[in-house]
Structure formats: C-alpha cells, structure tokens
Image 1 (cartoon, rainbow, N blue to C red):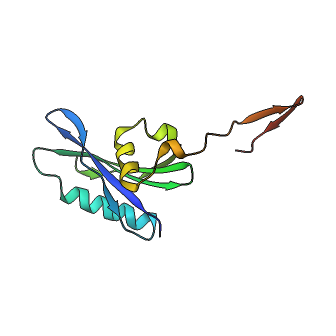
Image 2 (cartoon, rainbow, N blue to C red):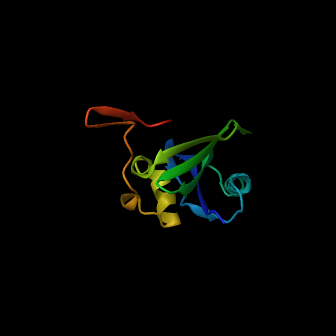
Image 3 (cartoon, rainbow, N blue to C red):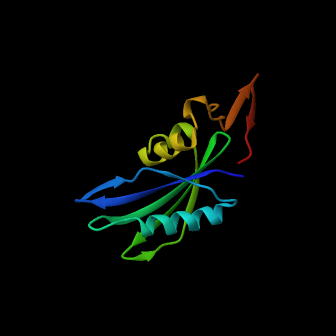
Length: 127
C-alpha cells in the first residue's frame, strides 16, 4: 500500500506558514487527495486562511507532489508533478513531508543526464 503525507499551507498574520504534516493511509492517490483535502479544510481555525493542500509520495528517487489551491473558498483542480529528491527538499513543506514518510533525500541516487558521450558516440535518453 502506498504511503502519502499531506501538509497545509496557511496564511497567518500575513505570512505563509505550514502546519505539521500528517500521514494519509489510503490505497490510491485519489483517496489520499480526498482525505487530505477533507482533513485540512476541517482543521483550519480562524484567523488562519487555507492557501494550499500539498500531498507527497515517493516512487524511487522521484517524489510525486500533488497540490490543490483554495482560492476564495473555491477549490481549484489538483496539479501533479514530479521532482527528484534533491530538488524536492528545497521546498520546506515538501521536506517536512519527506521526513514524516521517513525518506532520506541524500540516499537517493543522482539524476541521470539526458545525453552521454562515450568514445565519440552520443547517446540520448528517451524522455
């Protein structure tokens, strides 16, 4: 069963902060998204304002991130993207989710280059 972690970005006193992450125990990404959105929408108290819900999971060296913005009380569609573990830790809320999941970004293998040149022959990676 895949493991997910979610975090909420909130506006508090004019600054953007995040709540501590929580694990989502769901069988699929869709269930984890719904669970995270329900939980964070119900656990934000005044005067805080929910800005975004972020869902994080890991698949090898790639970190899958899904975000859903809440603008003016209306939920926006989920936006999904992947980052390498070394790039994902640059976002503090994603780094907190990775530590909640027990993932060490330093242990991930390095990114593969898009092109290699070996003995004058250029090899290109299919993307």
